[in-house]
Length: 119
Length: 113
Image (cartoon, rainbow over all chains, first blue to last red; front, side):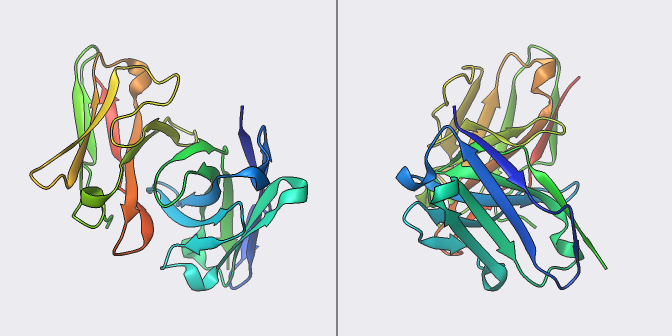
């Protein structure tokens, strides 16, 4: 059974960088699939952030692209998200998920982690 | 405002049927597979339907998906035999070729009366 778990600071200061890690168990992320990040502001809907292929190629939401970096750490079976120059609008629950690629489907999700941006 | 349009809420009595619509265009639903996700209160989203109408292992056949509309630019999620445990938010999602982005609907809250 594939399991994912997000980790990282729950509070980030405005204008700084948000960094999250997703630890995967039950599957070796370097073996296949895409791995992605989705966020959900409090009381709102889902927003896709970005995705990385097991080969290391990435693609991200055009509205966030200039601020987003998704990377793989295959030795640790983890992948990470960096979002720069955060503002209050980046306050959200951040989810990592296994992605079948290009909108196909997100079939396994982490439980999510709330990140608040403070001024 | 979401790229995919969903009704904010639907409701029905236990045992009844509800249909949730997801409206898009030729760049998204009209040209790509649609997935549906169920988000129970306080929980992460869960894949319910993929490739328009397929169910992952463990999803009961009370949940079904389809595409509709003359140009296939809309999708529907049907829930039959509604149960109290079905109270949740439901999201449709697909790839948008024009935006080059995975897009979601705004979500529909299902209430069991």
